[in-house]
Length: 579
Ligand SMILES: C=C(OP(=O)(O)O)C(=O)O
Ligand SMILES: [Mg+2]
Image (tube, rainbow, N blue to C red):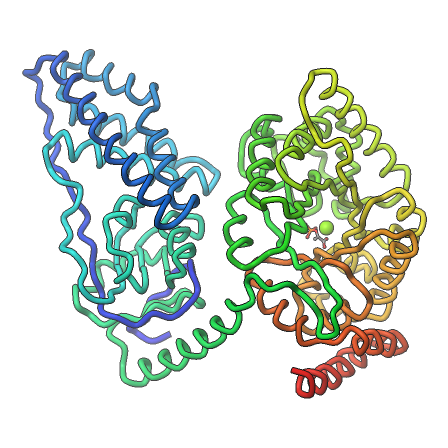
């Protein structure tokens, strides 16, 4: 790392090279006045809130038209904060009880609230403190009669450098001139990061003190892939990053053309290319990258980083948001997969000798049936709003699948009794990630609607190799003949019963594996959003007939190494001649 390079968190990919534009943070001078009329101060406060509300409603509508729901949603959130009766009550109480002016009361109450949010465990909640600050600054601006905008209008392409780019700051910028963003604070889920990604602008956040290192007009490079900012680049650095930018752009242009294209192999076989997500916030990336569905919604993320279990309503809202967002495309919600490496302190699970072989996922859900039923009810309720499917993790034996379905049937009965609508024929599938399930897939295929192969666990259990242990990672072999044979068994067993099979483990996103997986006949593959377009590009170049031959040949070989070599040779030739 050179002296003029600053490392931060990569928040939005791409390379930007332009002059810096340092956003001045507006600071308000708040003084405590005591000789006031409480009644008058409360009126001033309410007026300022009213003005802020009108302003925010306008920004919300503009954002909706210009950028769409995601960004507009941020301002909707601001309106919620602004209309929070608790917040208003606390400020008014302070004015009345301490006989202080509205500005001072607002400042004090907001500081306390921000402190509270910043101390929360959940990163998402911590970052919401920025919303509270943003809203309070807006109200303060009206109280003090100062305008919210201090910056001069932009007239040329710039990289915006800010301590913390709030949504209101962004709304005040002429985005057509913003080619990059760098911020002192923030993480991948901060608003500046979300906004940058949805605007397709390279961004690096969490840079600590980039504002202190840059003056207006300084030349800056943003590397949104590696999370770096280069201040006053040398001619060599400039040349290096110009080339990197051009390569990235060319690649992106080729890929963006594929966003709305189907995933069809060169000889016409169609597969479904879906996204893996952890929370509804990941939806935007999935859609932007042309996902044809959600192949794995890891629902346990809704349960993590918090003090207690999400209730049915909260879960329902999250599932519904994803179902609606995907607009009729399939959404596979995997039921709670906790245990192993994923802990939930509030469940107080017993310490175990072998957590990966222990009390986890479906095993735990079948034991704690009320918790499981709550989740199933939430999923069922969301099934009215899109094409929702249920998938159980870590099924080892047929009885587990039947028991889970029994609880599902009870959940359906309960909802029917309560006159709550749901999709009665919701598809129910099994994650195949335990070798026993793969070997007995023919029996499971009779009763399941679909399979999705979870190679992350399937490989670890097949090879008896902890997926997290670096020391034995040489044994974690996706191309081991045993793993490939299991995958083939699962696909064939499902197809014999007329069921479809997907894959949602990391292997699905591996460029080396995709040709062989296509040849083995997978119907669906699901991966992190950023891998979707490169995978679509690759699949469209592959010929199903040829990939079938490749898979047959690979399965006759005796080691990972031989199989890898075969794929490398064949696929290079096939892509060169056909693509
Ligand atoms: C997708 C999988 O599930 P997870 O990574 O969440 O265990 C898998 O095991 O392949
Ligand atoms: Mg798994």
